[in-house]
Length: 250
Image (cartoon, rainbow, N blue to C red; front, side):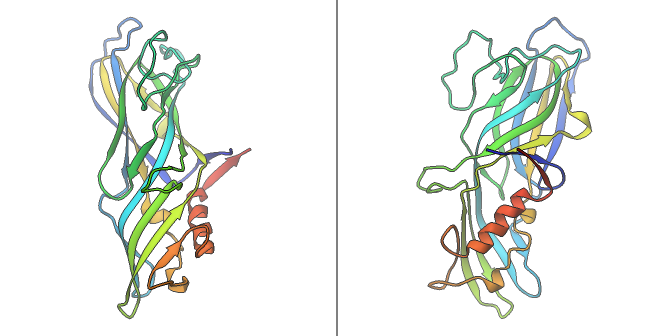
């Protein structure tokens, strides 16, 4: 599987820090790191498609897993574990949202997680951490076998309103399964002792739907279906949007 490094605006990272003290204690997990996913503009469901046409999204969800916050603290205290979930190295992990620990200080939230791209913020987890600096975030789009996703990682429903006022339902399903990597802005986020820091992964529905030409889509039974078997060119464009502004590492 290829690793993809986000360079510009497909995904943005917003770092919001709550109040903290400046006293550094000994090597204890005195801090918390909260990880959530939100959208650029909540309820931004109306997307212009050019001319007088428009596309209004009613449902837009993604399935992701293996959210890894990479720690690179320099002289700070390193987290104990390659994918640190806030537990001690000897503690077992029975939940679905945390992962195992190894040697280089990262935090992993296994998931899977279902995220609503349009409405609200999804809180993935909050873990106890040592003070340190976190540089990058990885996560993987995960095809979901549940009934709602039916083996896909992205599902979208909406209504396309043509320039003459005709409303056509739209369904898009993608099996995009790549791992993406985000370099955090300003060299990373520092987590001081006795603090709580929230790291938000921000999704941009507008960017993902850019250049999707619904005007020329094939309409079947009064509906536009975009998947591996229907309007596959539009699906390729959508997947290309997920890859836009990125550098691919083999």
